[in-house]
Amino acid sequence: MEKEKAIQIGGKIKMVLNQSKIARLLPDFFYENKPFNFDLSVNNKNMPTFDMSTPRDFTEYINTTLLSSGLIWGMGGYGEKRDFYQASSNFINTEDARDIHLGLDLWVPVETEIFAPLSGTIHSFQDNNKFLDYGPAIILEHTINDVTFYTLYGHLSRESLIPLKDGMIINAGDKIATVGQSTVNGGWPTHVHFQIIGDMLNTRGDYPGVSTTKDSEVYLNLCPNPEIIFKI
Image 1 (tube, helix red, strand yellow):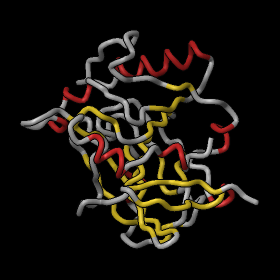
Image 2 (cartoon, rainbow, N blue to C red):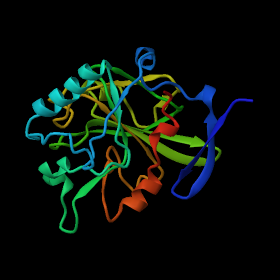
Image 3 (cartoon, one colour):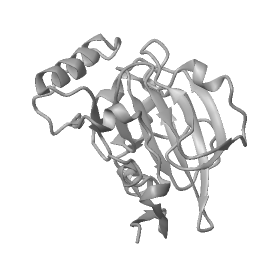
Image 4 (cartoon, one colour):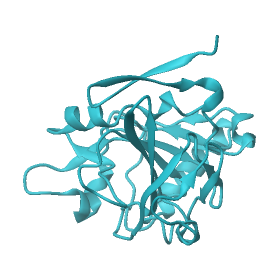
């Protein structure tokens, strides 16, 4: 019998597909090479302070870490408390700074192809072009066992958005995007931000990828660890 994965989203428990129906999000090449598990949290005392006004230092840190480890790509970040978002006013409000990361970062080269892990439709898409924002992002809508949820893909290329239309049918394994360069992805080292969302909260083309510490329990409940459907 094929394994099924239990997933809880916003308090709703559902069985999300057997392994054979979850497609790979990245090209096969990456799955043939294990990733480096990055810790970009405030707990990593060995991580340098970056000049966030340019992606140069951050990119050098990612590339140097991968080179020294002998690995070609990296992943990690779900639930991490990070302090570098405060370089952008986009993450600061009058009550509390947003610093709890809600998605999974996949540190891969520019133009890496991104595939839909599950079948669904295009919910919405948008170029969120603020400093340290997603840049181009795509949100897919999925309904399984009568429960609807969403997956978000951020820091994409602008070309990825051109052929899309709301409601477009996407099959598991379909190519949906490519990773964008730093000049269009919000000013980050090249990577894709992958996030599961239980309730879109009336947003389209965008959704918080980082929460305040105060609201983190609510958001982490709505956005469970994407590794549950990221095949590695």
